[in-house]
Length: 269
Image 1 (cartoon, rainbow, N blue to C red):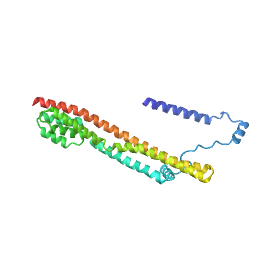
Image 2 (tube, helix red, strand yellow):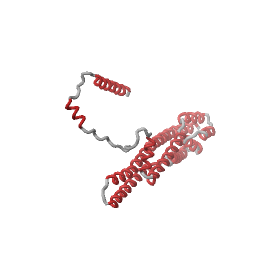
Image 3 (cartoon, helix red, strand yellow):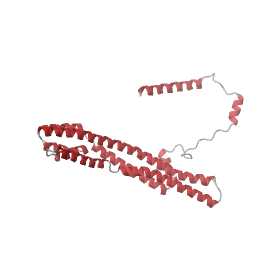
Image 4 (cartoon, helix red, strand yellow):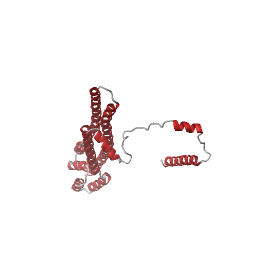
């Protein structure tokens, strides 16, 4: 990766140096009188248009975004904005919950193993009870149901692990709903806006470019904002899913090690 960045930097420096040298070269080819006449008489190409044309360059991006939001119509933009706010709130809540659910499982397993070797079962339960995270909860359920039968412990770990996975994934179905609903609302607003534009054309009795362009611009803005909301929520949702997968993998791996520790403790007793 460092070599790639270095190569790109060298290429940029050489390109800039070559262009600077050409600009300063006094013997550079000068346009003839005919070419100058052609250049003066040839009209300049039309500037490319974009979504934010007609807006002063000194305006900040959030001001432009607010103006386009108002142009799209509050009736359609407000639901899309509400989906964004609620979706981000759910994502942030899941991120905080998943962050608090993570624990140092290797250290916890080492402490439990040390306590069980000393025969301190109650102390091991207390350690799990005072440790945050789903992994410590699973270990506590296994220790609490240990009566010499490892099958009961395994069933308890499996059952409680399913409950913990459900808690980790709580609310994620609503995030996926908002990701699908935001562009759908945008498309619906676009279709209704186009219908209204055609109604205006029918009422006026003439296809005026102003009527068509204005109606289509307002209609398409709902789709633009709907897609933006969906993309933002998708990024947060994928991050939440990656955290859930990491915690679940940690739960499964540590549960296997925990069962090995209990089997060793059972063999000694």
